[in-house]
Length: 144
Image 1 (cartoon, helix red, strand yellow):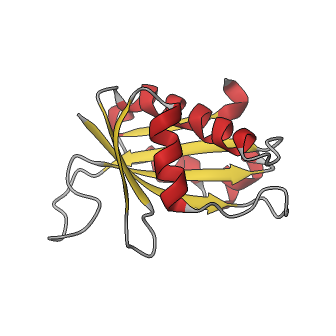
Image 2 (cartoon, helix red, strand yellow):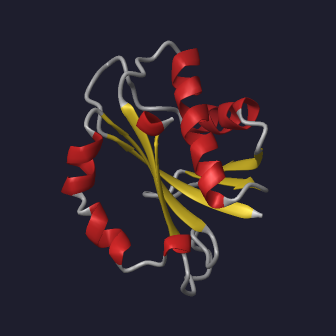
C-alpha cells in the first residue's frame, strides 16, 4: 500500500484556475482514478489530502497528475499550465499524530505556468541530490 500526503502549491495567478475545494477534490480524484482506494481531507495547514493506492509511487504520481488535470477540465478550468507531483518518502520517525508518517510519501502537487523556473526557484536539484533514487520522484504533466 502506498500513501501520499498531499500539499497543493497553486502558482497560476488566474481566475480561470481557482483554488480548489479539497472536500470536492477528494471525492473527484477517487471517482476519476480507479487506482485510488481511499482519500481523506486533512485538517492541517500544509497537508491537504491523504490518498492510498496499491500502485507503486511513481505510477500513482503519474495517475494523480492526470486525474488532477481531468478534474480541472470537468470544472471548466483552464489547463494550459504544468502540473507537477514532487514526492519524497518519509524515512524518519514522525511525530505522533502527524499526517506524514514514516514510509508515507509527502507529495507537493504544483500547478505552474513555468516548470523550469519553479524547479529552479525551489532548488529542486539540490533538494533531491541528497536522497536515494527510490525515495524521491518528479512527475510532470508536460511529459505525459
